Length: 270
Image (cartoon, rainbow, N blue to C red; front, side, top):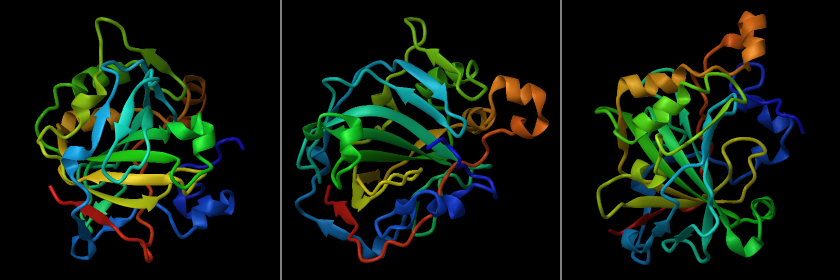
């Protein structure tokens, strides 16, 4: 199905279930993480959740609703914590809002952050990303909150790349003079405590195949860096030149929280 969804009043999250049945399911994401209802799990040690990623990002694309960075993920790993299998990094991207006080998909006790990075991995036992989407444990996504604060050094490399992909479907490759290490966009403090629960993709088709691991500690980016995200356009270059309505910037690209239902949210103990 061609992309017919977005974040506007005509095609926003409240309309997705009309075209994507799973969007109306009982295991949808994001959710509001209510810390008083979280279960501390002594079996979950943040030190036992490990990842081994490529040091370099291949390219970054303006998808029309966010920037998405691709890596050469073969041989990369995410293991431990709530995961029983080995997962491979596929891509990472970000969600944000119109200002620095809103934009994260998950919230904590009702609090929003300025943005949320998602590092998307697939379960290697299924052989491919596409096959993994069909299974309840097919994907593992690391969520990292972004709050407005001091400038993030590694994110400057991303910002420089974004200047070359202002319009939808534009892609820029990273080269020797411009590199981006995804691991440097993770929270720097150790241990890295997290929450975990069973959920879904937060964009259509909203497949209920994700083990979510959301880190408690945010990273910081400056207001100016976050503004660079909001300066991207949701239309392609020709459309933006031909029609003003297509030249809107990507100001809001997060899905509001969905009911947690009877799902358990667990927390790592250190």
